[in-house]
Length: 434
Image (cartoon, rainbow, N blue to C red; front, side, top):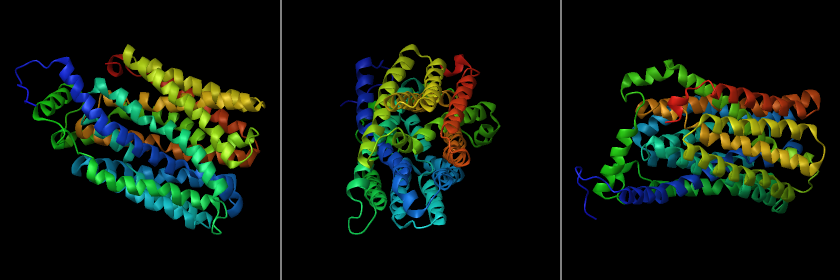
């Protein structure tokens, strides 16, 4: 194909074809990576159904172990994203996937609380930088006005992981249990770790660092895509001083607080949903897995509908507030009713709300961050916000042990979602809606 002249206007059909090539080359692959990453991060929620009883772990021990992942994640996430920006996504994302797969498989050997804590921490260290790294990577390919939809499709890996991963986890634990004298929860960690290592190796061969290194794009397409990126950058300048400016930017810390509130709800669901479904009266690990997929199917539909509406109306704030309030209502009602099917319905509402918040949220900080500032800013926001991944399961487990009542933790999650929704409304509509 002939390279396009810079002086000749680009037809919309040519631009559309170029972005279609980019989409099919990178988005399905990155989404698959996220499905695998999220499954290895939260499959401990299913392992708990057997592991806690077999090893004598209390609710608080499980909650601390589930959450300590995010301490390692927090410490290493900003350095990880800066390294990715310097050496390229291909090598660094492959490194992340291979190491987290190896650590996840090592949970096979857990026999004590200390070993559980250490491996969860190391899993956080290994995975640090994957999610914000992909968010940063998408800024290398898409201008801001095309990015929200791509982030939403990538983020769909979260509910997809629940839809397929929950039944898979339940099936492995139920039907592999005592095979070769090995417990089902041990088989769970080994079997689900293998795809991460395999896809990590494939990443080295498949992924490109950016537009200029993509051999599947011609010169004209590269110029077109690069020009759109340059025209769409309205954020901080890409210079050494911009990294320090990120830390001084009040907007970045507001984003951290908003994201913290939403992540509280997200991991309250992902780490405790199997336990909540079991408490609703569902019997058998495989059946629990099947029923646990229902809320994630609802979340997938909500993400598509609300994400499409946000892009069509070019409005971000209320499209983020509404799902946050959906999540709060879902938690409150699910905590107060005893009817099993109705509890599942409102758990589905809560799941749809909290999971929909994540892709819509990232349209806020990427509206005023770009270049090196984006590498540091996105990582700071994600790492600080993900400390809620430590706080949420730990506080819920502690409250359950202290009170014997699961409702208190769900009320706490509802409160944080309401607070997050209120903080969203303090942002500038002029900035985040462009």
